[in-house]
Length: 247
Image (cartoon, rainbow, N blue to C red; front, side, top):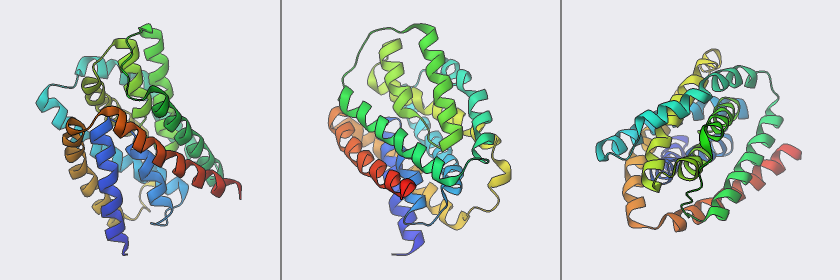
């Protein structure tokens, strides 16, 4: 299978995850870029930021058209993470690839565990502005450091702390992800020149189209079923990457 075809298939899966769940796409983007497509962990993190930023923006447009994005709340949430995303993006360039791989594996495993634990349930316990600010800061740090969008943190926080319906949490999280990934990219501008854009281009195009299909997919299947399936994939990815970092 050629690199272009692999990029198209992987991009479609990333888009489906982002469009359907409001996050999680970068959890597939990074390992797809590292293993079948041959990117280094550092290159994959940078490329994933480009892919996720453009794909999230495409998915966000669909939610804006249907009114399932609360822009004011999303902007406030994102503002807490912007400086952390930019600073972590600068720090990432000085960390060893094995450490980034291991860190990504741990985050992927935690994301899978959280998805399996919540099982799509909507919780309404409010955590207040402090919790939202702390979650936004943590999300920004992970985005800049590992190239992950952080929707797996944003969606539960919006649902539990602000009592958003799941559809609005997914749409609002895409605004947060888009903003944070752009901030993280600002700290990595010097490391993007050497990336293989012949792979990133088709990957991104397929992901943007997949995000639109993902939103339609979410309307046909239960959130719990989608989360369980995605969580199992994430667990397999986390195990593979952790073994790669250790061995």
